[in-house]
Image 1 (cartoon, rainbow over the protein chains, first blue to last red):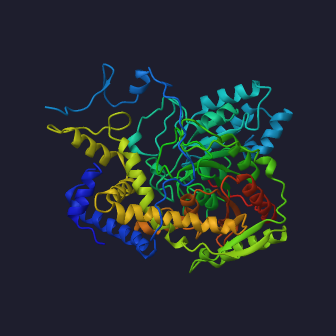
Image 2: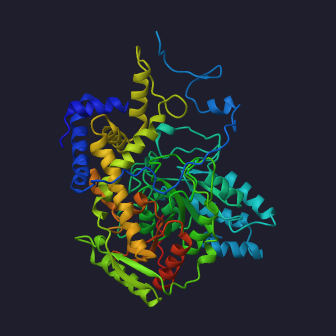
Image 3: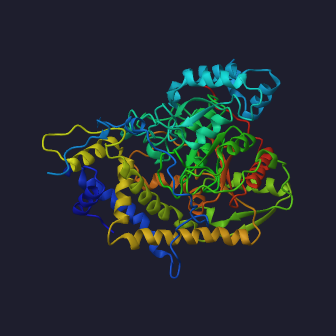
Length: 95
Length: 490
């Protein structure tokens, strides 16, 4: 399957990665090469096969619904590029 | 002094217990080697103060275990409290975790000493350590003037252990990232069964495939380190609640009556004659040691890499969504009028390298509406078939499977620069199947090729039977007698 620049631009947008217009043709070419490789999977007969959900047969463990950690806002905010008054700061998101 | 860093973990343990050396002496010897080896690009954050403090504490301890006072290197993928942990990415520039990964916590509880953080491919995506924000890690082995890759993604770990900068190192393996670099540098590396080692505090790449494991100078050291790293962790929901056996005690060297499978699908067209020969030699050695050799078939092997390159990028695109410039790491400078979407897009464009961007976007594509069934679900079905291939041969009585570790020896840094990304992915052709099937796999150094570069063999074991697998690897190691070391040039 060949990927065009419109699709490449749409995928970049979905992934929230800015790609310059001039770089789209190269990106589309790389996507096409990778998808060409992946498309070998179409040769496999997967009729009646369930998609794998867990590589080791196990049930997710349950635990008591209790607070086990928390009350450390300073540690949580320590690595933030912009933290103010106990909050993560971001550009305005609502008008 | 410099001889001390050449010790194996087991030899250092014995010398420490007898009082022949102290951990401070051993640690100082390693730190001196680390400082002389900047040309290898292995250590990217050195932590001599932490190391010496841990070494002093180890020397003061009277009831220390096997790793008490043993200097290790830690892959940059592991979060280490107060110490940069960047996954070799620009997007985690300046990130110093407020917490310690479970694996490093357990190693430190057992008395291990951290010399520093080790280079790797960005977010563990790569097979040559060339996608790192820190620059390349370099293989201590050379076959001419050119610098060679130590493999990837655990390239810094492999380089550091092979060059005797440390006694052992942590690695992680999503498609072969412990075993391929181990093979390229003439050391031992084991990826345990999925769920054996906690993933908590290890920067996630593809959560259903990622497993951490040790990279060491021999099989015994791998057994010692793996025991410390393993065990149930309530903080990782996929961590198995199983007792951890004494892996070192399993090393008896007796494999009489074991059945070793030789998969015909791993006999690739164009495989170098030296690799075929080593594989045959290894088979003969296991037979001489009393194992029964059987030819087996793993019919879906060919589809492992394409399935991997759907599943791993899909999981990566989801895991790496957290790098948005809000909670940690890099945030792009914004232009007038930029909103939060522009902040995300610019931050991720600046912070991620090209290979990471490519995989995140491929993952986004295969998960997007209209393609989910055709790519992602199909790949998960093929993955189920690959796992069944292994279950079928184990049901036939096979105890372990012997294969080559890599399709070639180490290549030159930069050699793949203009190649199609898929060419680089072929490095993992022999290792990726075990990640998809969740099985343990170990690479042991087997010999040198005509260029004088190391080649490895891989053994794949039954789930949760790392002890048995390590014993088979130990038996093979005894026969192979690989003792070559790189000539020092750094």
